[in-house]
Length: 247
Image: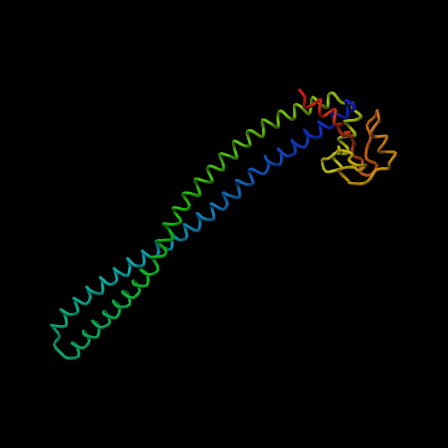
């Protein structure tokens, strides 16, 4: 195999790894943003439940205060009723006392309703607090793992970029220009293997003579359909495989 072609094949492999690492490095912050957004959504839901529970308790406290005021008012009215001088005054005091009793019953009924509402709210808040604490722990662990992964990826990326530079320095500039041009126009894939008379990238059959020329060519050849740089790996013979395994 031609030295330039061997280096270009390695260059394609390096570029594939660089692309993979760049995608991974770019994807990790997005992943972190997604799980943080989900965590914030659960936090907001918890705050809504906490606010609803606090409002429930506040209203109950107010109603309990109203009941106390009505009880005090009743006590005064009863004292005043004992001092009533006419039947009309007596009935007026009695009517006001009944009104106080009605208001007290309304408050007590509402308190019972609020107690029924507060029980599931309280359970929801406690369960959400436990779940949120665990979710925060998981998010922190994922963030730490992502940061470590990004650090490893960047180190590997630096090594690959250095290797890429070294490879390019050893390849004929015209071959490099062709490689880069095809790579830009073919989705990052500039090199393809010829397998069974077909380009493994575009899967189009080659002319028989062209395929034969490729097998024995002393210059770099390209797919007549997609323009990618082609290489051919001859099948190994049984003797070659035996020589490889023997040592």
